[in-house]
Image 1 (cartoon, helix red, strand yellow):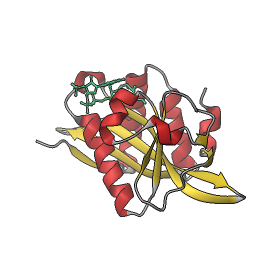
Image 2: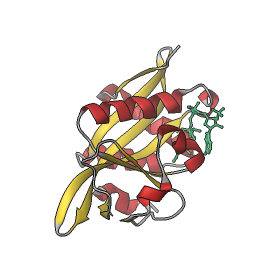
Image 3: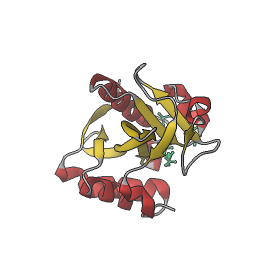
Image 4: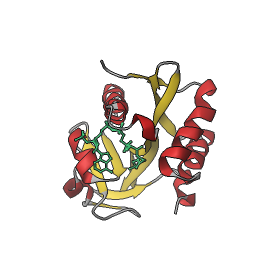
Length: 167
Ligand SMILES: CC(C)(COP(=O)(O)OP(=O)(O)OC[C@H]1O[C@@H](n2cnc3c(N)ncnc32)[C@H](O)[C@@H]1OP(=O)(O)O)[C@@H](O)C(=O)NCCC(=O)NCCS
């Protein structure tokens, strides 16, 4: 059975904070989600349900790709978190796949992620196309996924303001 994934509501905010804190073993990612939401930079924030509880969360936030003095919108996938006792049940996969489907339907063209290529490769994220962009997170974990032929293929990526406080 596919895990139930839905958009966050205000009633989920505390649980989302708790999921990110326990999954990452610290408060930084939870604070990032709160700051992205507070700044109005969340494009999509999804939760995965198990029974009456929510046990997984993913955030997609607005970012920009700048080239030749022009800015094109793109999306950052971060953070992705599942409660440890619910790992390996397909919840992370369901969250990412649902998010990418909704972004495609909305006409988004390009998504960036920083993470394990072994994990994100299953969704089509790749390091080679991401390497054509300049980014504060450039390196072997920096990946991109093109959703449309209209996507920019190079430029300088600018993350939402909340990422400035992430070390
Ligand atoms: C990464 C995470 C969200 C995956 O959630 P999940 O619900 O267990 O994922 P799924 O069940 O969809 O997929 C599990 C698969 O991913 C693999 N996987 C999980 N984390 C991985 C990693 N860091 N690197 C490579 N593979 C990984 C598992 O081995 C498993 O492989 P299998 O399908 O061959 O058995 C979860 O492990 C988590 O919350 N981790 C802590 C926070 C984190 O690191 N988030 C990602 C930041 S980029």
